[in-house]
Image (tube, rainbow, N blue to C red; front, side):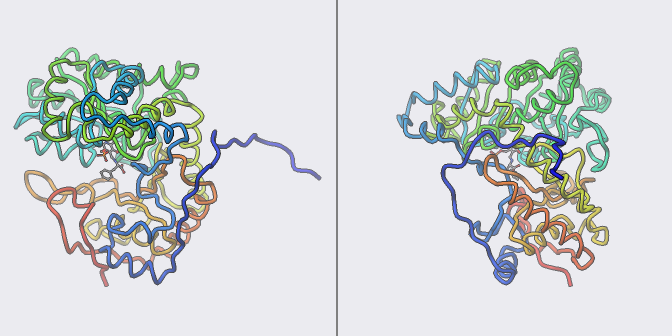
Amino acid sequence: MSKKIVKRSWAEPFKIKVVEQIKMTTRAVREKAIKEAGYNTFLLRSQDVYIDLLTDSGTNAMSDNQWAGMMIGDEAYAGSRNFYTLWDNVKKYYGMPYFVPTHQGRAAEHIIAQILVKPGDYIPGNMYFTTTRLHQELAGGTFVDIIIDEAHDPQKIHPFKGNVDLNKLDALVKKVGAKNIPYVCIAGPVNMAGGQPVSMANINELSVYCAKHGIKMWFDATRAVENAYFIKLREKGFADKTIAQILKEMLKPFDGLWVSAKKDLMVNIGGIFATRNKKVFDEARNLCVVYEGLHTYGGLAGRDMEAMARGMDEMVDFDTIKARIGQVEYCGNKLKEYGVPIVEPIGGHAVFLDAKKFLPHIKQIEFPAQALTAEIYLDSGVRGMERGIVSAGRNAKTGENNFPKLELVRLTFPRRVYTQAHIDVTVESVASVYENRKSIKGLKMIYEPKYLRFFQGRFEKLK
Ligand code: P70
């Protein structure tokens, strides 16, 4: 009997033209490599990695159209043609009139914090992001988490786990006063929560509240098209709107935004600072010449800006986002079949393993997510990233470790890079590590840098 058709499969809206060879390694090679890297996957050489799921940042495959754009880079020091092309697209897609290019996202975060945050200020946000929070702290501010409680529970199902709890914001306003809150910092989707989106309804409620209290809103639009995609699929009234329309609508209430272009824009480098506020813009382009380069290149080559501009045209394509998030979902659902505990709902850019549930025998201070990340690498050469206590760092005032509720390993998918077969290999590796989980030991930190310790911290295996 022939097989009955029960569904229609779908595939990526592109085909492969250029390939990059990757190396398969032996367990012995990986044992040596991870030990030398201090059990920190950030310190591995990429030549020792088989499938690289460390990040989706700058690791994307550019299209032929983007590569063609690289050839028409105008490398003039001042007034590059590509800068103006990019600026036009910033206006077109993000709806902001003013734009300053930066070399990547954190450079824009630095400029924003320097302009808007003064010592003693509080910056509420829908969960912290490592670099964002650090720049707020370096400017003398204190970050306050106002995300809904559901976001801190890996198994809690909620369509918009990135939403703000307005009661938490109101309590902060009552406690410290609106004048000590320079802006509310919203990211969509929320990286550290598992790539969870924020709803249009929540953004609109927040904007009513902020307008009433005279508080500005700034948006981390690093993966904003993925947020728009979730709104289209999950929120009533948006099914017939395009990603570009939803993106514009999402950003309407915000005074400004920043983007790590290394994600949505599918380029290898770049950042965006954009605002509606002329005064903030003038200050930002002035700081740009101090830290980045002239305000018409911001630390980038003309060709990079052209690739960014073309990447923007591609980022709003529904089928491209569907294929990308479809891969992430495919991976997450397969892991669930093996009983592997993951953050749910499955997010936009990555599958997050719940290391607390995966390794209940390892105390949080023995770095379960860090240990699990190293163990997956050892098993197959698949490289993920710790997103738990190491990433959460220390309290800026007391110096004590922060103990986040979420202790996660992130398997992040670069855009247009890996195939479904790569995902199968990844899933099988994680499932086999899960099967042998009881034998996994915790770690001890033996070197801790002052800032963003997850990047360069070193560990040793506990006996
Ligand atoms: C990642 C990357 C970068 C990022 C982000 C959001 C929501 C800003 C930035 C900064 C790279 C990364 C950064 C810190 C720790 C680990 C990894 N996220 N906002 O892999 O942008 O890197 O361009 O300076 O996700 O998630 P940039």
